[in-house]
Length: 122
Image (cartoon, rainbow, N blue to C red):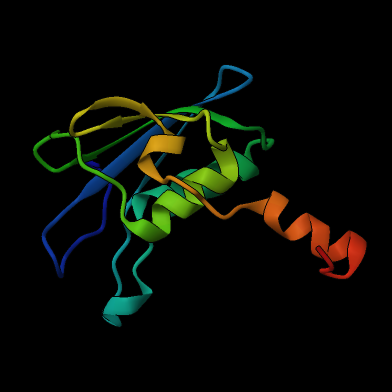
């Protein structure tokens, strides 16, 4: 979070996660004058995950500029689900929870797999 670029909101965010091979990846928010083009800390974290070899996220935490635990936004919850799955442990404002509780009934890659294999027929 100390490396965040947040000149517009003044709200720096940092994120860190453990990967299934033991690595730790991190990210920070990067704002832009075109406000809607902001890169959340989770985006940087997932980019670092893939830039350093990929894998699956196993544990995740996100903090604000005061080092307080904060919740990822909806878009970022989806991003984390994609790269950690239902069992990803997320440190939330109300304790550690699996992603299945943070984003119940999530839509993920497996929901798209049947379309590629059976043309979408159910």
